[in-house]
Amino acid sequence: MRFITLMLLFFVNGAFAGPPAFAPVTPVRALSFPADFGAHPEFRTEWWYVTGWLKTAAGKPLGFQVTFFRSRTEHDPANPSAFAPHQLVIGHAAVSDPAIGRLVHAERSAREGFGLAWAKAGDTDLKLDDWRMTRAPDGSYRVSVRSNELTLELALAPTQPTLVQGENGYSRKGPAPRHASYYYSQPHLEVSGTAGRAGAAGPVTGSAWLDHEWSSEALQPEASGWDWVGANLDDGSALMAFQIRRKDGDKLWAHATVRDRDGKITRYAPAAVSFTPQARWKSPRTNADYPVATTIATGTTRWQIAPLQDDQELDSRRSTGAVYWEGAVTVARDGVPAGRGYLEMTGYVRPMKL
Image (cartoon, rainbow, N blue to C red; front, top):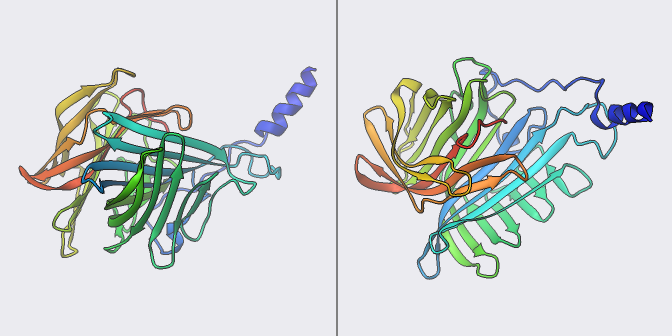
């Protein structure tokens, strides 16, 4: 019996093959489209992340989030079995409705294969059971998410060029060059379709932001998580800012990008970016204490971030293992209303692991 158990461990876990070598992120590789709209299975972690503000037929605001994750496992890549979990596909979706007072969310996960789940290379083509996200040759996206909790059937049309983050897509996440991701954004996507709680969804219009990142070693060991914001500004500008936090809460790294309405891009180094909490909310479910309102400095500009509602915590411990705050926010520039976006905060329950 002991011998049989050891042999099962050998075949199921690839215990004697050793972990695979994940592809590194380096500054010498420039992004190339449309290929980089698709999946990069040689890297450890990847996500396509869409957030936005919607307006119902009655004029009510809603926030929404759809994220597809692809994760390459440490399973032996030489294992030819169709059941071997070489790649995992995970999906998160949420609707933020102030009339409910909290997020309505759903999550799914599956190993890639059997025509049930995939993240295809070459262009955006993601499937997780009946959840789908695809990109058409004209650059538009279709997102379809249905669950017992919510419905999102959305068309997203680009109105601006792709915004390549960092240095030609190489986005540093810490002092060491290997702690980085490849990263681009698509701000100001025009949204139409159907959204809402399951059984109560209706027609919506709005604006969205798409992020696509892939990496193999983005976070350094001393990092606990990050705070990130992506915002579509009313004048056509776009703001992206993030900070990586140490386990003691201090800033470990930061970066920001502002593209103005004329297309001029300004990038801000770590010393020029700071996040200063203005109001906090404590989750009654996890006891995590989130700075749900904050002021972000980019050089001499101050951005005031305020939530659509305080409770926008998402518990994904059934899929990714993480609990994070993911919420619709309004944005003011130096005290003047300037736009709307999404704020993400991770590592407030326990340190984030990718």
